[in-house]
Length: 138
Image (cartoon, rainbow, N blue to C red; front, side):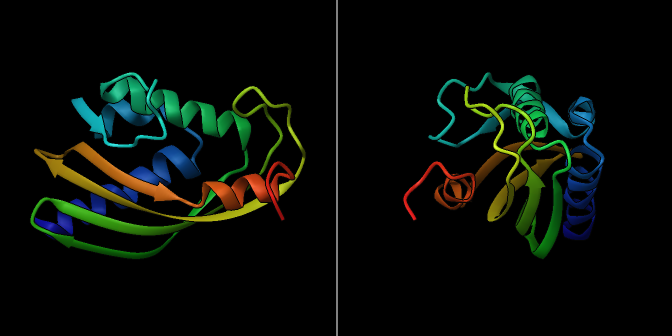
């Protein structure tokens, strides 16, 4: 099952992030999906909330591309370390586009049940992203 779950998660990065297709969220995320991310307190629940996050980020970085650096799985948990890069050519968190290129890293821990993602614990270099956009401390 671990290999099947890893393949599903790889497909999520390809079909949603790299294909810039947040509408594919329903195919991969359970209705009861829960993102355990305190940085997104206003995120709607379920697959609709995940799609909202994807749509927002893809609109801000329409050329975003994710590379999977490392992936491990055990039972229903898949952990992925990734690198993402893109150009900020859309607004982000109410800020106008900067036109700057960013490269950030992050880790997602996803729980997969019955072929759908039901939980996510993740972290990415938010401070590094803001610095690269010229909005943080050097």
